Length: 144
Length: 439
Image 1 (cartoon, rainbow over the protein chains, first blue to last red):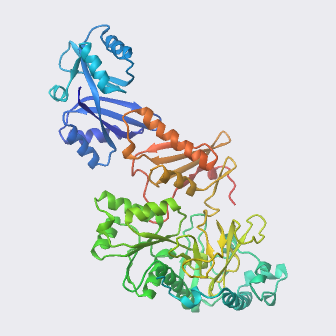
Image 2: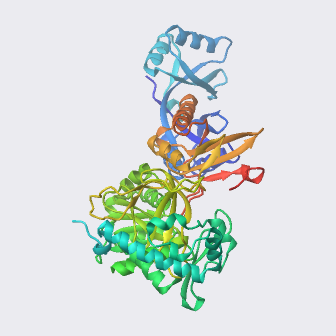
Image 3: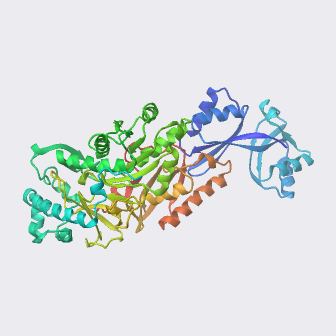
């Protein structure tokens, strides 16, 4: 199974919150590989994958940000019509529930990468492998 | 073994205490009638003469005093001694309006420090202890009150005052403070800071805390006791009757013994003013029977609580008052429902949240709104929005069960709500600016 670590950070939904995090990351020389924000009226959850998860967590915790690490699945699929649909069908057929997903860029302009957060990561990983869908490891992402 | 500061008084048989109260009350009424024109006017208006008050049974014949009276007579109208006999002034925080100033003769200061000495002794304090006073010093009675009481017991007294929490903790460690005196919200903050510094209660020598000056809950008590590794004792008082020490808690931690040799308590119906029997909830009223300079008779505290004469395992015979449910000043009426901030605090601690919160009450389209800002618990952070919103909903549900009305709960960042070093500000009532009638 894939073991890509995603960092989640609690931020209030008001001005200058994300910039606080990004300044710390910039200062520490960390590179963000993938990022998305889920927002509510009161707060947002910033989710990101960086080239150094441990360091990122240390830096943020030091600055008193609530931080949590979860394992997610990262896939790389051809940049062509119907490809994401094929992934979703594969998961859906096996009753794997998708909580959220977001896209991020790799180095190839012929492929696109996605973070998938599912209810059953082990099962999803096996199903995707069977369907021949490429899963990225942490090293793959760090080396991007 | 239970220690007493003044066993003769603290364990005095009821009949003897009643006799002492009767004598002191009669003399006090005479003193007030002769020296305080304002109160004499009130008594004359009701047709009551000092001779009519011979014992505590006659107390109900006397007129009440309220904060409004003290504002009206500010600053000297309640003074019963020449200023040349007075040695000190203290003042209320003035959070609910104009300040009230109180005057003290040397005897008044001595009586007050005697009361605080009883509280410190009941919390286990002796001359071996280092008492760390982190109440504010100055016009506020908290600092000076516990300070003088600590002196009286012979404790090594650290007059820290409030604020500069890092320094507080450094002194606690370097000088081995054993008893901490401050507001409960500041005690909670000190506990939080100690944890953040990577320290545990084992790094401190604290064994007890004496906390008062604002309402706090049993849940908050347990949480402070854990975070500081102490036994936490409640203390009650108000500037109008001297300061902290009017009542204090013993090892039973179940209600506070009132220093009845100085203060006679009554519980009244806040609407009718009628005296209620023991055991009923009502407004607490105090009559000071020994104060010389600022002797208030039947002063309405606005605190809602219950009195009990049940035998206490500590051996004290002094009547006990339950932890006040809150000043009626703190009570919010939201959509017609009575809401106490302490109820919100109870729910937060039960659900694993920090007791630092901010209540905002407003009126939108003629309907009251209640918003509660709660610091999220970092241990409960989830990457899934659904989980985070569930936390808000669960908290709102628990609040609704407790309060009877539906609040909006907002999770905010940890530590984003200002910590208080004195009395905590928990409520912003925006309605008052518009059309909310204030009592």
